Structure formats: C-alpha cells, structure tokens
Length: 340
Image (cartoon, rainbow, N blue to C red; front, side, top):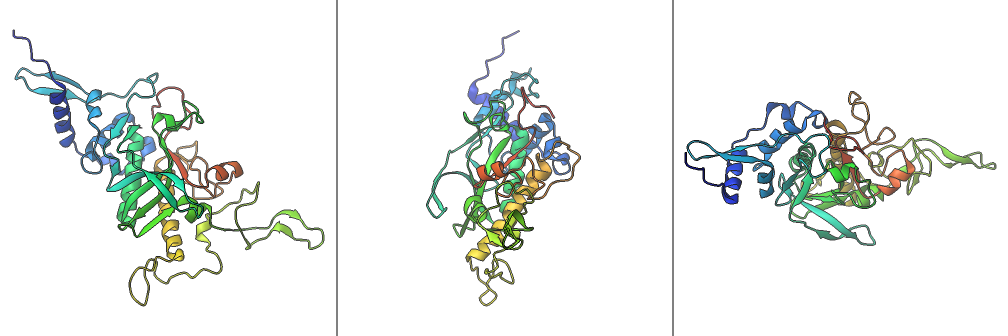
C-alpha cells in the first residue's frame, strides 16, 4: 500500500477553515447560560459564530488533528476539552482581526486631564480566550452593536499581569476589563471613567459621624457627593439618579424640536447608563457574579460581587475599578483548567 502524502500546513489550515465554515450555531447557544456551558459546547458555538461574528486566527488549526482518508482527502477532527491539569494555554482561541460583531476592540492607553480618551492602541488580534469567555464577549458586542450602533469597544486589559495571581481568571482567558463603547461613526464615545466613575453620587440614606451641634450625619440623604463615602456599602447605580440640575430629554438621543441628535452631556449620560447596565446584565446573567449558580442575576450596586465597577459595595474594589467593569466567566482563581 502506498504511503499517504504528508499534509502540509497550508492544506491543514484550508481544511480546518472549511470545517468551521460549515459549522452551525447549536440551538442551546440561545437557551443555555455561558457559565453553564461545557468547554466543548462553547467550542461548537465558537465555530458556529466564526466567520459571521468574528474571525478565528489560523492558529486554530494547531488545535485540530488531520489525516488523509482512502481517497486522499483531508479529514480534520476538532479539539477535545483539555484535561483538568492542562497548562493555561490549553484550549484557548485567538481571533484576528480584533473585531467582534463589527466592534473594533481598542485598548485605552491614556486618558487626559479631563478624563477623555487621549490615546488608544489597536492590537490587531486578541489571543488566549477560553471559548466560554469568547461567547460571552460576543453576546456583549452583539448587544452593543444592535442597540447602540456601537463600532468600538474600549478595554483596559484582557490578559493578566504580574499584579494578578497566575491562576486568576485574566490569566486563563476568562475575563477582561470593559472600559467603554463608541459608535455611530465617531458621534459618541462613552467611558466608564468619565461617564460613570467620575459622575457624582446621590446618597440614598444618611451616613457617617454625627455632628453634635447640628445633629446631622456628615453625608446626608439626597445630597450629592463626588464619590461614595469610605466604608459605605448601601451603594446604588449612580447614573440612574441624575444630578438635580441636569435636563432630561423627553426622548433620549433626540431633540424634540429638530428630531436630530443633541449629544449634550445629559444624552451621553443616558446612553452610558443604558449601555453600561446592558453590559452588566449580560455579565451577571451569563458570566459570574455569585458563588451559587442558582442565584438570580444581581443588579448594579450593593448586591454586586464578582462583576466589579465604580458602584461596588466594597470601598477598595470600587476605588480600583473607577475606570472599568471587571467581568468574568468561571471562578476568579482556579488551579488547573476549569471544567464547568
């Protein structure tokens, strides 16, 4: 029997692309939460989304095995779920270019003194993504594109660094720091820093030490302050309580006299409020926010746990997340490959 012809790299990549091109999005993609997906289920969703919502890097071919059949045709077999003791790079997907659902993914490298974006960096690709997280990220981008005409997604990091535990979700491709969204051409850019973290808060209750003369607390109900007081835990989503001196348009995003976009600070606040809440809701529903997977999704504020943001109940966490929303799928720290 003649020895089969070796399979070249070009042939394997082409065969894998054809395999992925014919993949369909499984029905459970829209009925099962991302956090409940097995790696294999998420893999199949990724293959179904590839070429439609994003493009996988050619390195995906390295995850497949390839053989020639009796007719000399190349048959590829998709990767299996990595073993629990696999290294951090196992079972990770890379996308190229760094665009998902039409949203260009941009790293914010620098803010100016007014908290506006001064410099962004385009990486060209995003690597080391657990398929479950890639699905979660796609659902977020899809929502932002469909509801807000988004064309840009801003972030402050995907992979971890020396400040993160080596087994942190960042280092296992299951987390990133969402920093904002832009869209409708260049008509708007809203960031967590300027349009959330640096906005005033309205106290829901009296709090702090009592003034012996006035018999009032240092922080008073319905009064506005730059940030939540140190140690205050009864936080709420500050953007839902607009500053008292701000005009609220009758129809968001529309000038009732011209039917055209106004894009004044209040309209930006409303857009930011809704978009950031949508990102949070997807993260809390599909990803991870409590230890009990049967808990209902949390809402922004005092009940938040693993989805961390400027209004988190923890003083230290909200301070360190004044410019982004940390979101993840799976546990925060896990030794070895995480299996649902």
